[in-house]
Length: 225
Image (cartoon, rainbow, N blue to C red):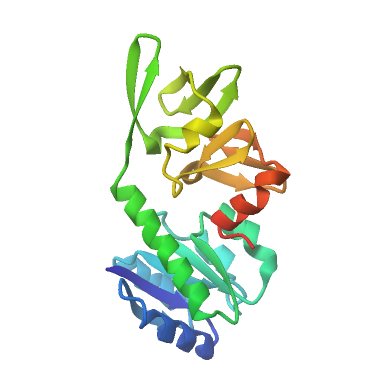
């Protein structure tokens, strides 16, 4: 069960979230707050997995509030303003819901959240042959993959590994919930993206090109609409 709370200074918006949450079997909306500071105090005392957070509030913005939280609490922003989507992503938000929030869109965000938990719990092992060696690499340890000649260069937390394979052939073996193609020569691990711009991503401090052919798919996967 995924335990959640919601913070929004509009009571009607909280009522909508409560109604939606009651229909999602794996989500438990424990409490709602119109006072953002009360919500923060609750988070300090209780074990909560996800926070549904409004952005435009009177006392403090959701963006500023999110910066006060630990990385243990995932955030789904709920707002009537689309202009903050990229800022929300840079704060590692799971998703960005635009009001009025339909149940279909709410459910999609919840499944995206659940998918993150499932990926975290089921870290897969890649067996990569490099010369006479076979490397066992966890998917979470891979930052990004780039094509170089007839090889792929896997950039990982343990360094770089060359692997004789094509981008097209390799991505078909990877979990699409974790890896996504951003360019004809690049595959990135979604978990390690720290910044997204119109035509490039930042992964492990490296700038990765985002081509026009893959932009819509990447933005949709990351919940930016």
